[in-house]
Length: 236
Image 1: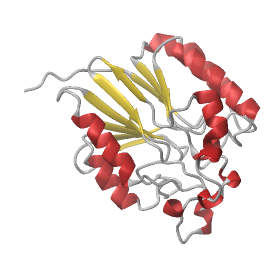
Image 2: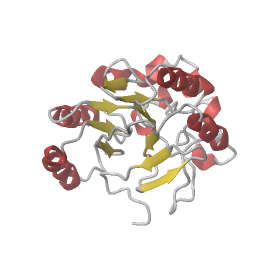
Image 3: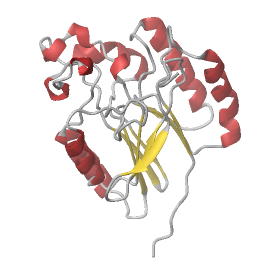
């Protein structure tokens, strides 16, 4: 059989720099990180509360501190997207990510490769978009969606890796139903789960629901949902 390689990933999400950030928790993470000796750090979105410049700037400082210890990958969340500048893409898609790209770089779906490990970002935060619309008005601008183009890209990336490479997919919206919220993060979640599971990912990491959890998809991919480093917790 294959020799299973082991890696330590630190998975964080939903820092919400701005009004709701819990700076005590953030500072504790910054102090603790080096002692964990991770191979990589993953930030699965919502670094900001309202995508303001000062929030992104503080998010970049946090990212740089993480990178002092280990390679770090970040993807955007729904709070990082200025959807109001182009609802339903009426004025193009690029404008809603312009501020995020200014601070975190052009790549919305970054890929991190280490010997024996690939961590690949997927974009689920599209703002007010056709693919994320549901019959529930509470979902407007909140729900994410994972197009087939994203899961196809992940599958192609993972298929090109050696069989014993550990493959991790990163997206913002929670893939499994939250225990407290009883909500899915993704519109068309059944299709998204099946396609994610078929990419060949060993693990899927996400956030959005603000409640830590873990589970599995039917084919065996482990799903990790990170909690939040803010006071916007589920169930108080």
